[in-house]
Amino acid sequence: MENKIEHYDASDIQVLEGLEAVRKRPGMYIGSTSERGLHHLVWEIVDNAIDEALAGYCDDIEIIVNKDGSVTVKDDGRGIPVDKHPKTGISTVETVYTVLHAGGKFGGGGYKVSGGLHGVGASVVNALSKWVDVTVYKNSKIYQAKFANGGHIVQPLTIIGDCSEDRTGTTVTFMPDEEIFKETTRFDYETLKVRARELAFLNKGLRIILVDDREDKKDIFVYEGGIKEYVELLNKNKTPIHNDIIYVEGAENNVTLEVALQYNDGYNSAIYSFVNNITTPEGGTHEDGVKNSLTRIINNYAKNNKFLKDNEDSLTGDDVREGITMIVSAKVPEPQFEGQTKTKLGNSEVRKIAANIFAEGFERFLMENPEQAKVIIEKSMTAARARVAAKKARELTRRKGGLEITNQWGKLTDCSSKDASISEMFIVEGDSAAGSAKMGRDPITQAILPIRGKILNVEKARLDRILSNEEIRTMITAIGTGIGEEFDISKLRYNKIIIMTDADVDGAHIRTLLLTLFYRYFKPLIEGGHIYAAQPPLYSIKHGKTIKYVLDDDERDEYIKTLPENTKYEIGRMKGLGEMDPHELRSTTMGIESRVLKQINLADAIQVDEIFQVLMGEEVEPRRKFIEENALNVVNLDI
Ligand code: TSJ
Image 1 (cartoon, rainbow, N blue to C red):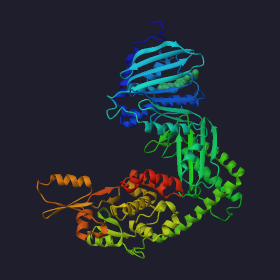
Image 2: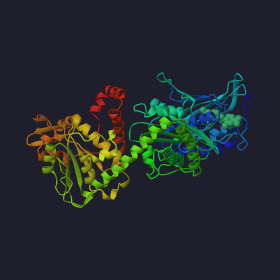
Image 3: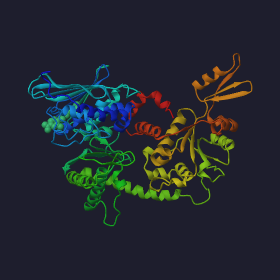
Image 4: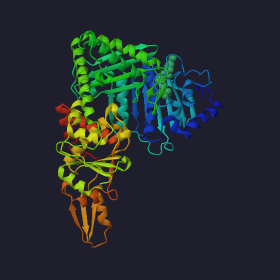
């Protein structure tokens, strides 16, 4: 073939051995072969285009899901080098596609900063694809290479035509191999959209175009303000307490750092950090450096400007982070990830660099914007006062020996066992239900804590007010672990904490309030699987002398099908918990032989918390919209 650029020879065999390893153990390279792993392929390819954008040569990246289910990624960068690769003797294009870990430093100039979960690349995508086509526009020529069946070169890099001189770029199309991705090979538009948008936020000015040719969908993401616009979006349903989104940017020793932040009138802190466009939920040195500077600079400013007197205590990290929404995005040449999920940046040199860059920019902002600075300092100082008050309140909740756990209207009816591993506490809504529960319980292992209808909404109150709420204090005392910094799981008094509310809208509301409390202040209890929801039955089916209780319509219908023909039965709709007699309550909802508990996991709680923030936030408009859009779901908050 005349236009053939390189000869394809025996080195192919060696190359395929490398790719074969990827096919044998795909999970090692892309995490899994589930839907998640499948989507990972797209990001492995996109990462290469983003590197080109970070190097300053590419403005547009297009991601297209084709009608046949394959994906095309296109950029307008310089095009992958087409010359002979010095080490392998084949073209660079073929090298990156067939040699494991060849991604990145080929071609020289710049360094690879972006990178997927395991920092692998195009060769892995090739290994796990049915076929891959690569087209490079460069030197007024169109070059193409094709691979098939897990990486075999079927067309070495070949000139297939001419193009105009100013046309440059790389286009890659791949079809995932259904022999590898057995669960699914279908790309989900929404999944791609979420990450495409995030990448556009994280790389300001970069235009990412997402197209679905299967069903004619298209989105274009470009944010000139980058993470600044991200913070704006995150604070959209909140009430910011100052006008500007503070933005700091800088570079030192090949590490670049961007930070955007704004305070709102809430009490939580929302900090999201990234390294090389990858989220670092466990934080790390980049995040620590910025947080340390935030605390130090706010304290300096507060002292220098006489907000804080010399004899007053410094503001703590928690004080200065109350109500903050912040994004930290670092680009680090050779990131080392640590931690349980390898999502924590470990490079120690980054701590100081991040701290320096942020301190300088943040300090300048405070100096130049004294009015906004004042609002921020005052918010931190209020948080500090609340912290001191909360500590006092917390001291009141410490158990003083005995079991004097009472409040004005209700009281913990404790179990007689002191062995936490077999003890359970039911949190029961309403006095009459609590009455039945007390009589129907197993007094050795089951404690009953009655609560009134609506407990305090912890989203809307600061810790000191939460802790001055008697019902919540009773609950904290009964649970035994303490909260926040003092949380100590070894002091847990009940292995199971069971929320028992009616199967109606009010019950769902109270359950939501309680879950929010647990999520915000007792997260380890959720993580440890100690929180449950009781599931009172919805129907009773009576036939002869037998009564069967069932949880929902499906179970009712299933049960009726199992009855012999001509059996007469009577279906009763169960009343609220308060109207059940103790025996009924025990035999359906509380007794360990027959009950069905739903264990609450973190995902349930997070979902509730998110819904809650919208429902309970100060802003009326998003709330109204949300309720309209989710009217049914809210009623059935499915937990
Ligand atoms: F790797 C890949 F094939 F998956 C891929 C690479 C996929 C996509 C969609 C884009 C790319 C890519 C690679 N876009 N742009 C580049 N740029 C280079 O490889 C390149 C070009 C020129 C030079 C140079 O020093 O002249 C260096 C590099 C790394």
